[in-house]
Image (cartoon, rainbow, N blue to C red; front, side, top):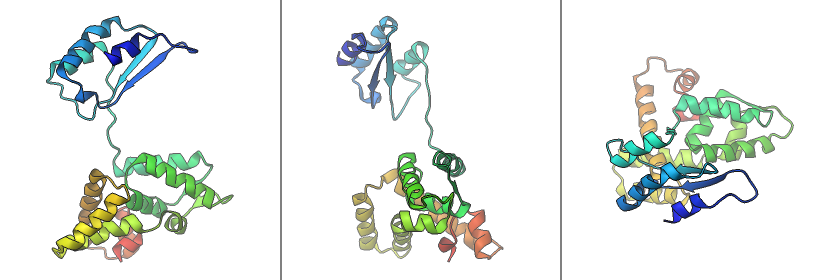
Length: 219
């Protein structure tokens, strides 16, 4: 009822009114039915945006919704896409960033664009008038904390040191690191360790470049 009332309210001081509903998958089935009945009558002055963390297209709600609205999927970016995103983002500050700087940034911060954006803004201020952001800059501004914690967590798991692993997990949680981010970084860490061990090329810098990581990881 609240969503419908907001949608029915005419905009004030603008031509359009946007109503945003987060986690719409949590709406009660009765609420979803009422919303579907209302949508064909929604005013042209209202733009309703429904965010949903999970979408099951087998359900009637989503099947009907697809006929009445436009569906846009926001998938998580992969490592290479994030790398390209970082390159484009630094251009907004009239800066460039080295490949090892990008790799370290991804290792330390993860794949959350909001956090990456914040760190890039800090980096642009840190280098001042200098155009190129390098590895030393990212190490100085971002630091090793998160990357080291993931490495230490992996080591504790290998050693079956449960108390140490739980302690590190608690530290990561306190630093507001998301569970999905921890799982992603941990899996990526073990995958890279395997690739290092399986590689015939033992040159540190070649390996770092191939694995899109910084040389300190290989050492």
